[in-house]
Length: 260
Image (cartoon, rainbow, N blue to C red; front, top):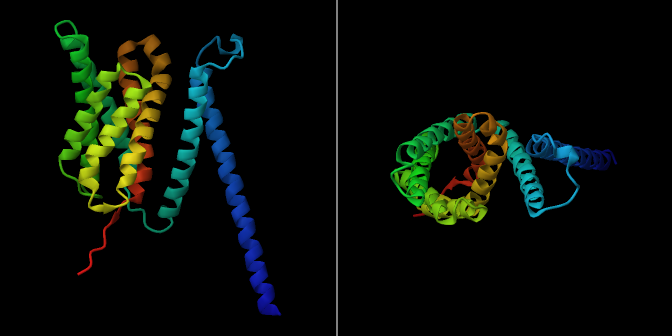
């Protein structure tokens, strides 16, 4: 009887813990969604005076912020679980590197526009600008990953080529999705020796679409004050958000088991 009571008590305690975990995740998701919604909408002084009409842009913002909240809560939960045992991903240096790499990439790509803006066609400047930014992002990824999941320099080349694709789409949302898809597919060849590497292809289009959209929205007020600083800050935010979300597919990579 006592053994049965202990088993039932253990089951009940586990149910309570599961319920508490689910509730906490829901609260964190709601809080994050609310903060992001405010940051992307209340930055405009006339927001409260606008008519309450849903446009395609509004729907897109809601969809992206909802997706971000789900991804971030899942990422935080995964990092917490890993940190309780052995955190193999250098997640802090990875995220900081994303911000710094994005800022440096933004600075250098901005210089491309300043130097070649009057002598090269707009399409050529846009392509070269994105190649420079993609190269810095790819180099930053390679620099941090080499001690965790060794990848070759093709990672940098793939990133440069992938980012340049958006010039064909005139910086549209479809273009940012295409960037992520191209980068994911080409960088996959450096990760194919790991299990679950296909997640890199699936995740990259969504992640870079989210990162670039949020970077543009968040940097908007800064650009109104100082366009140069807004440009650099926006691309830094793109790197920060992109690298943070890329921790999700990175955490799925495992060494393949070889059998004799």
